[in-house]
Length: 279
Image (spheres, rainbow, N blue to C red):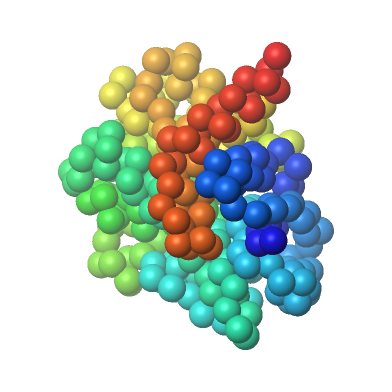
């Protein structure tokens, strides 16, 4: 049996086990996908060692440990080395190799909606997911990316990283500036766990957004996220957290199994589950 898993905190809401299990069943694969809630960042290294010893082939990493997991990987591939954050780990003999499929998922979704180049973007949050999003937006041709975060020093660190690496215009602002920045922004991305954590609130309301804005949300939940409800209230285009989740999951599945699968089938499974939660 192939063992896969998800580490993070929280993980109980995750749709990843269902998506990967259904995909494996459809393909006739003997696969089991488990969730592992890791209490602290200090526990990540020990957890990864234990899961490697138990024979796990691959792992997903969710908030808030994407940067910590990158630090414990023995190798980082592709853009994940630049980003310094991973959401996928694949087993190698001496540990884990880190990858970032969040980057690929957001890049592909944005390109499908608006093509490449010529837009300004706002990213709320400055953690591991935000690093992947900024890289994806720059790869999609964003002319300027604004990073807004509650802890300004974290936003500044992220902005400086990409300014040095890409020569791009990435600007840090305090989170309270997000409302003003959004009014002049085509693409607005949320990586703050608003709706998952009581301490995280979305700093926008419906009047802060352009009529042609594209909203991208990395959060999902059984009752929809604050970003989702904001998009619905204004009738705005939205790449929601379930689509991002399914896109990155399909890329993760390929890394673990070598099998290319359609993200839309994974997305359909996730949306069905969300509907069942509501019923």
